[in-house]
Image (tube, rainbow over all chains, first blue to last red; front, side, top):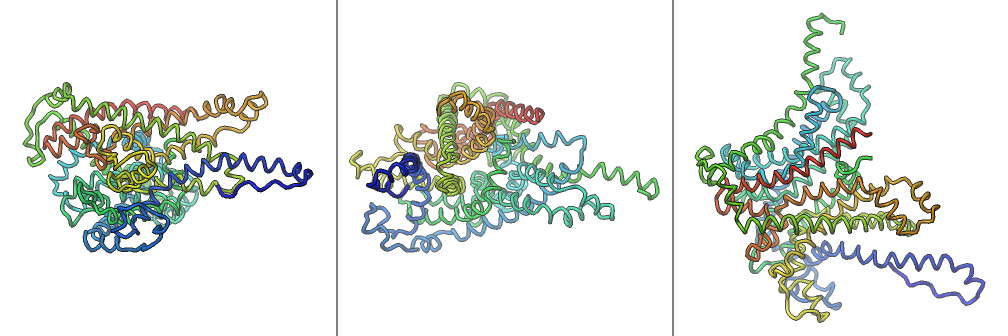
Length: 297
Length: 309
């Protein structure tokens, strides 16, 4: 993207030697420049969000000029966010729901994954089909019946209700991913432990879990991100201010009139931070896991 | 297995039961959230019931909730929007841009300049951002008063005064489409990259020996090689997007008027604004029926591929 082609050397011999790498370089730039512009366009909304969250409130609605580009950047919007809204509360709520939900999902997925990976039982194909099929079920369609069931069970406006929904929501993919990871752990070790008299649960906790930790990490992060990002059920289930999650909180910040965009962008940055960090740390594993359903080589 | 025979038998039975016990928690939560509500949804669709009533107090109305949908122009518009704009347009654009970006990511130029890892991370960035955050960021960019897009456009002299992109019928759908394509493109790119990598390089060499040019290679090797992945990715994205609620809900709420209403927002409005849970359930059943077709095709294709291995 950077640097103009070098000036051609004056000596004709040198030029003949250099021509081909230079020509290649020019051709590369014909590809790199448009591609770089596309990358900038892709990055822009996130960068603009971060930048807007740091701009002073009186300037945010004005245009950007070169003189004021980096002037007066401050964390004022973040201060306003925590002082004027319940965003701190929302953050804690989301962390709690997602942390508990993730631990439960991993446990559930570990047990079922062990069954699917180590046993060939009669219902195995049916269980696999259920796991794949539930992922295809239109989630929004469930909102009315689940709302009624949970209202009856008095689980609305409670973290317990939302955690149950999130565990169930992330279970199918988590089980499938975990089964894949467990398949790559040799069975000789757990068989040896079992001959020594260990129960299945001990084998899973003491032998399998330490061996399959990359799978545990991948499943945890995938599930955590899915729960962190979820909006619809949180919106319908949690109506009282004290239990709202981050996503519902942000959606409440961009009201119809007089939106304080500095505050909204500050909230957005904080809401995106956990997922961006987790995603970057485990980029390859996550991409492999999430695209696994579509591509199997 | 040298213990007493009776213990061996019970141990064996235990072992046969074990996979069921181990999968029980997973199956239980799935039954609670997916299976039971799906069945309950069918019952609900035949009733008239408000969220403030007890579930047992619904009044049986037969197929009324469905017949009400049939001639309803609002439902027709929502169905059209869902199929054409929300799903059709965004899937087509994602596939085209996805193939393009995947080819770019795999190009030797990026490898030569050691920019491949960086480019990949940039392309993945929108996927790392929660959907709600993506919507917030874009609403700020598209803002009619002080959004950056309006500032750029008027600085270039292309418009005078702010254009409220999400409030005009001429721009609102393209704005929503842009947000969806931006946020959901990385998945398609990554699948396409995996698809490209699965094409054996000998095929390219053979075609090149036959004198195929760049375009010829793309048509005779790349596209046929991507075909299996392409079908699956179309099915997956269609299934994911068709039901999406949040993009339309948090950008326009279905407006202006009900110009951008989609089936998911109609369902939500029917159930929680008009307080007609039965009507919402009926819309949900229609959506499920349409998606079932795609789901069955998907399941058949994936299991066929599994068997052919």
